[in-house]
Structures are given as structure tokens and as C-alpha cells.
Length: 131
Image (cartoon, rainbow, N blue to C red; front, side, top):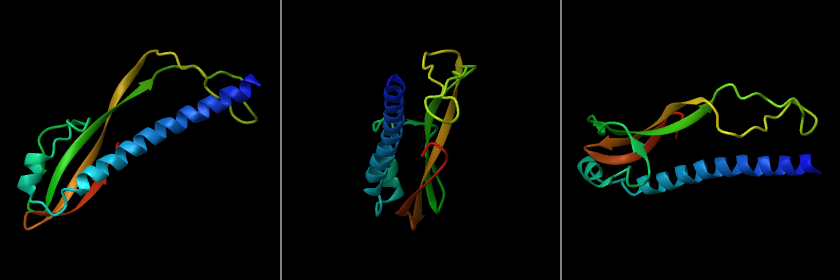
């Protein structure tokens, strides 16, 4: 019974993490869609990604056809956490240890590109692992 309960809690926790990131990405996309049809100058003046809760690198880069922002997401990767050699169900062992331990941080990036025509945003596209 405890193993089933533990499996259920673990599954809900993992789903919650995925849902939070997915929701945040959707909210960002909704925020950025409002800038379609605006000038690059207006976007640079009005768009404040840090106020939306995102860490950014540098100032936005602009070319004739593109206005680009870089959003950074810090991911904590644990080191040397051993897997428990008991299986919750039939299959591979599941790591149950969640205590904080030694690890390192990796900054993943997401590039946000506004495609420009004559200085006006026509679309927004995303690239990178943190989007």
C-alpha cells in the first residue's frame, strides 16, 4: 500500500512540475502575441521580460529582419545521488531520495525571435531547450 501511495505522490509531483513549466510557457506566448503588429522600437521600449519573472541575458539584439531576446532558466542538477535498489512496481529501480545534496547549476536558454518586416513584428518564434 505504501509503495502505491508513494508512486501516486511521485507521479503527481512530476506532473505538477511539467504543468507549471508548460503553463508559464503558454502565459509567455500569450504575453508576446500582443506585440505582433507593433514596431520593433515599441517592443524594445515596452517589453520587460524581467517584470514577467524571467531572467534575461544582455540587451535584445536587432537586425533588419529580427528582434531577439534571450531568456535564461537555471536548472539544478544533483551529483552522486544513489538510486534505491527497490522497485516501486515491476520495472527499473526508482530513485526516491529527494534530499538536497551536492550538485551544480546549468543555465538553459530560450531565444525569442520577433520576425520583422519593415520594422514591424509579423510573428514570434522560440528556440532553445528552456522554452
